Image (cartoon, rainbow over all chains, first blue to last red; front, side, top):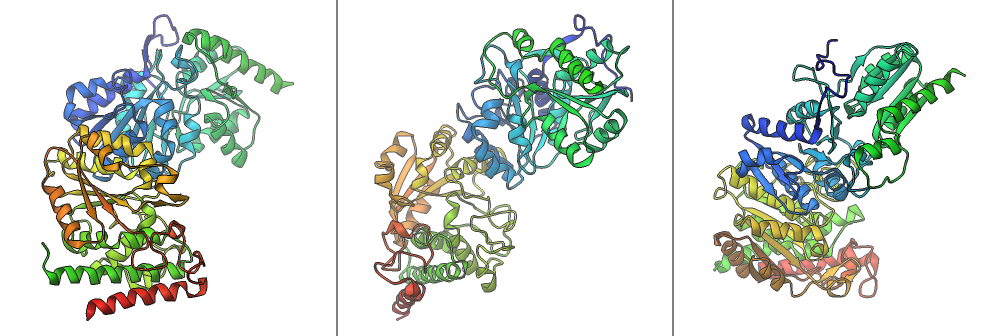
Length: 326
Length: 293
């Protein structure tokens, strides 16, 4: 498959960097032009979630609920019942965490079509610290029936994801990081919800990521090409899980390394592990945030200390690969 | 003013709604008694006089939207809908809370689409009602149908309720009326001992709402307040309805212990459990006979 990546995409000095939240914001504004029943709801973070792009164009379809996430969820549910397509937008810890039970009751249980668009997912939030670095949102959405959970790999994919979410049914979560990360996909790169992307083929190890970690995995695969043949999968949709693509890859490689900016307990790695435990158990390493709260710091410092940058991820991957060869 | 004939007709209907509530609760062996009996008059006023609806066409786009926030009083809604002619049979009423039933312990609109929402967890209905009201306005339908939101007093202890109270005032949602079942009880006791809510009217006034009060068992007053609320412009309206929990059954009235208990499992200091169901129905039947005289 030709994924039509940007030119010299593996060179992080020349690749464009932009935050997923910006891509999501632009996507909502573009979608609003053609979808007149789309409504955006914000909780005092419209601009920092980049939903102001929509709000400026469509003030009559923008609802500002103030710092009140439970109401954000409840009003969204009411709009959805009444036939609108609400996009509820705020920081991930508040969007998914603060009002989890109202979300469960008013949106998931009746299967209302509401799209949740976050910013501030993961340690890529930076110096705001652990209160704002959401590393449990995949766990909290994956366990709710009816949810579709999408974690775009870059700003361009985030834009496509918020647009694709419109045509789905039921609750949809589009998970976005705050920090600028490499944009290696292009408008021509295909994207289909629920269809994992094998971005690079290999035979020794399957490396599965979501979010910006996919970019590191592609770089690592290239750097280690002479030693290990790594197959890289962008698992942008965690629910529903594309088990078929994972199974095909794992039957070939026999080993899985997962990488994500999320708690390893309950994250994408857990989801893949559950699937493989039931279908095709193989040795696995789940890399991510190791069940702890991080701290304030620049994103680059956080990535380094918590081993979520390319070097830290490579180190973990090599440890696993060597152990498995013993 | 209602005619005497209409008034009596509504009283008789409310009485039958109450009898059906007891008849549903008996086979269920679980469920809430006090709230449904206390709200029977308001549900009757809505379904049999005020509400714009068509029982044979529950999906009618121009119907009024009735959002039940405190879902646990659903027996009164199921009963009122049954008597109003919605597609619910007497046999189905006996399936309340049983496996496979459309009449779940808390309302499930995916099983019973004539409901507007699913509900149960308290404090969530008003936010959703605001969503309905905003959607109606966006579509230019604010004068085509009205949004009614029924809430309990206890759920005003939920912060989410007040988030929605602020939003409704901000957006001047005059196509929305909230009715509070002010019965002063909740599961653990009297509201004012669990968490004082008074002065409730003043709280709403200070949030820039139109505030009306009514006796929750006087049809003339209830209907007048409901109509008044629709006519008010530029702000949302709340109607604080003073109700008697357990209304119509003497040994249940104003006793918080009947909040979440069906006849047969209630407190025994007045009527022994084995006689509670029969005694409740006997008292309600007696009221019916007096009304028919």
